[in-house]
Image 1 (cartoon, one colour):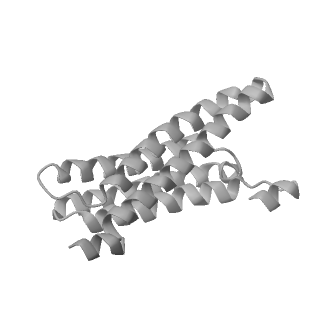
Image 2: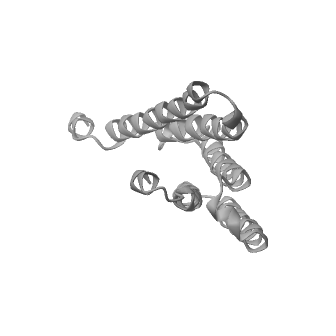
Length: 164
C-alpha cells in the first residue's frame, strides 16, 4: 500500500480486499472454535449474506472498490465483533480459549470501526486533526498485535508447558 501511495496509485482496492479477507479469515477462525452446529451455521450464512450484499453493491457501483467503502467496513467489522462476542458467551461456562486474542479483536474492531466511520467526516478538517485519528488507529493495531503476543505466551509458550 505504501508503494502504491508513493506511486500516486489508488491503494483503497487493497484496503477493501483486506477488510473482506479479514472478515473471512476471522470468521472461519471463530467457526472452528464453536462447538454448537447452529453457531457454525450462523457464521457461514452471515458471511455468505455479507459477501452477497457487498458484491451486489459493487455490481451496482463498481467504483466503490476504489473508494473508502464505509458500508463494507461496517458490515465486515460488525460481523467479526458478533463472532467474537459469541465466543465470549461460549467461554462463560467453558475454559478460556483464545481469551486475550478475542479481547484484542473486540477492542480493535470496535474502536477501529468507529475511527474509520469518523475518518470520512474529518476530510474537511486540518491535517493535524485528520492524522490524529489515523495515528490512534495505528496504536490500536499495536494493541491488537500485543494481545496476540499475550495469547501466544499464555496458550503456546514452552515455559507454560514445562510448568505443567
